Length: 526
Image (cartoon, rainbow, N blue to C red; front, side):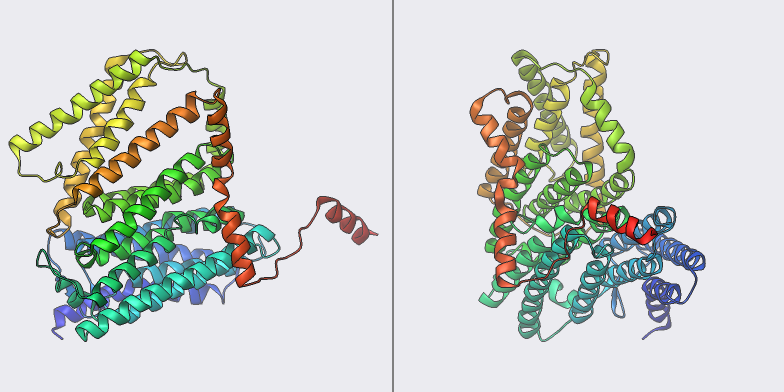
């Protein structure tokens, strides 16, 4: 190995090694020193990841260095993982003060982010799978931070089983790809699909479908979503690490093997159907929830489904943008959930009014005109393929329609020009960021089937209709009945939980009642 490649491999290896050493050192130190060690380790990892990404963006790094991948995709994920770890550790140092198991949390949290760093950089199937397994087992222990909580134990049990199922799917896919190419190098396997219109064998189709299934399970898509809703019993920093970092690895798996996925119509259809329906249902269920953390958990399931749909449509740059934005937003949302409660109460108490039919129609017309104008300008001035797939623009048009139609609020002045300007800024920011991420990622030739575009557009229209009915149609009897099913999550998790415990029983801790705690405390004081 040339000394330049050896130096780069060493620099890349330092990131997970520093976090792993920090985890090991934290177990042997007092709490105060352990927190200091964890802060130093995550700071070093974040700084080095930022430097490596800067070098990668300016094309000063090779695509592969030793056992590591160094394309912008992998370096962006490395920086994202270390940023979330940096934030979570600093927040936890205050949040967990007084907890008896602080050192356990410090070590496990650093282990999780060290394993994530290995997973997003690895160029070897076995290393990637071992890192994925380490992440799952470490998160299981974090989710059991309060082992005496029945809901936390049930959620951790279900996640443990589903995660092992996803890993078995990934293992099956990796074995098929290894036997087909006689290589365990990820860069070699994905490089074989660089040519457009590649014809896949049966084993390759099976591998693509197994990867799609693994991603669907890892991203908590319906009906295997219940554990994600129930893990809010864990400490808030654990939820932030899970929703802001770990759960995105299902999407990263598909981004990593996108050249294979883009050539497999069955795998794309599996994702579009399961993730598409899951995204719409989870978004509708989220609107019925009152608990902030539960709403955020349902939102994660919906957002993960939308991200998987974007990948299946071939919008990899949009999916990566979505992944990064969702990670940062969701980590912030969980860590500031206490403030979110007050903000939500103020929002609910603020008076509002229902938009009229004319306001809806005018908002829709303005939104559509803005999107069409942008499309015409882009088509006439650039060679961008951003408008080759129209379903994302359907979603953007519907979102802008809601924004403009609900602009009339007695608590704020009715300034149509201000809201139109805001809508234009949102649309311009969306297109600019999407184009920026498109420059960072390699171009993969892919034509989105018309049926897929129409299917996703239909799902967006259904979501818009569901939002309208839940917002303004609850006076109708059939809407109230539908809302009850949404509130119950369509009873999917109850069915899955019942069958999971039937196939794999698990003893749960007994529920502790307040009266029992009061009695025990009085007896202990006598």
